[in-house]
Structure formats: structure tokens, C-alpha cells
Image (cartoon, rainbow, N blue to C red; front, side):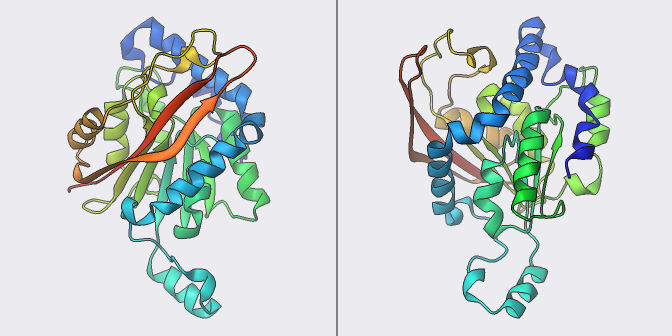
Length: 280
């Protein structure tokens, strides 16, 4: 199922934002390396937090504001359900998808989940999980890639053409969950995802950290973190500039990251979810 998602890995050494000079170029390959290492244990290690996040996302189905495929399918006759599904196709772009947290949260409400991630191991884990759940590639499939390269990046053309087919446009919802703080240029990321939404109705959703103290440099992920959280004002400005400021909404979630390991002290972080609709 994930065979073709690996074939592009050679383009990948350059992803994520060359225009910012060496430090971020270095940071981006570290990003990929770090998440490749994390992929196999990520779900089991963070299970409690992931389950909590899935629950929080599902609680906000109305807040997200997409016209969902079928919210009460379990109570209906099979025939009626199939008829309803045919009427409304709802497509999700799960960007920086990791092992597929957002896809799993919203699968009951959508007809297709398309994941994209920089890390080939995360993509393989995402696709293995989808296959294990009996989902077809048409229903849930991730691809390795980067939509957020500046035009000056060496692999910009390759990456652009990889994702140029109609399959990668006209989404009802594009979501980034806990990936935004790793991006060199979050505003560019928002703009690129906005372009892939349905005109006038597609929704961009971002779930990430509120402003927080800098991560302890001893933490293995510290080199991959570029932004230390975002304020409501920053996020609203990013949405407006990307053309998805319509009906902007912002909520703080009840989830608090609270993690201590043998080598790093405990830290707490608050999380927000923001949404906006593409205006044209």
C-alpha cells in the first residue's frame, strides 16, 4: 500500500525551506531524521495524549465547520447510509500527518483522508495503520513530500509536480496538528494549504501550542523546534494573509502536555485549535 510513497525519497534531502540559510536547512534534515527515528514507537509512547487529542478534535466537529459526510451513520440503514455518502464527498488533507492522528479523529466524518509528511517512516506507519484497519488507499493514504518549499529550493519543482494532480486539490479541510512549530515559514505553509482547499468553502484547521518557554536544549527534539508556540493574534494574521480568515475561530483545548523523562524536566504546554474558511 505504501510502495509508491517511498519512491520519492531522494528528492527529500532538500525539503523545508532553503531560503533561510544553513541553520534551517540543517534543522530540516534533522526534522526528518528525528521523526524517522520516532515513527515506530510514536503511537505507543504518546498513546494517552493522542487519544485525548482525538477526543478533543471530535468534540469540535461543529466548531471546525465543515459540512461532514455523515455524522450519524451508525444508526442508519446501510442502504440509506451509502446513498448519503454518495451525495456528499468530504476530503481531508492531513499535512505533516505523522502517524495519522487527525485522519483517525476525522475518518468517521470524511470520505477520504490524504496524508503528506516529510518523514518516509511516518508515512509507512500511517499507511500500515490504515491497511490494518481495512481501509483502501482511496479512503486513507499518505505520501512522502513537502508542500511548503520556497520557489528557490532545489527540489521545489520536483515537489510541486509530485502534488500537481487534481487529487491533491479541492479539499474540504486541510489540517496541521502539532506540526506548525516545526515549519521554517508557517505563513507560507498556511498559504500553500489554503490553495489546495475548495474555493469559498474549504476550511484550514491548525492545532498547535500556545506561546511557551524555549525547550530545554538537551531534549532530542529541540533542534527541530523553530517556533515556541503561537498567539491568537499571530495565527489570525497568518490565516487572513493566506486567504482563509473568513469565520476565523480560536479555542484553547483542555489537553495539557505534561511530560518528564529521565533526561528532561517536566514541561507543561497549552494547546489551541484554530479554523478559518477560504474566502474565494
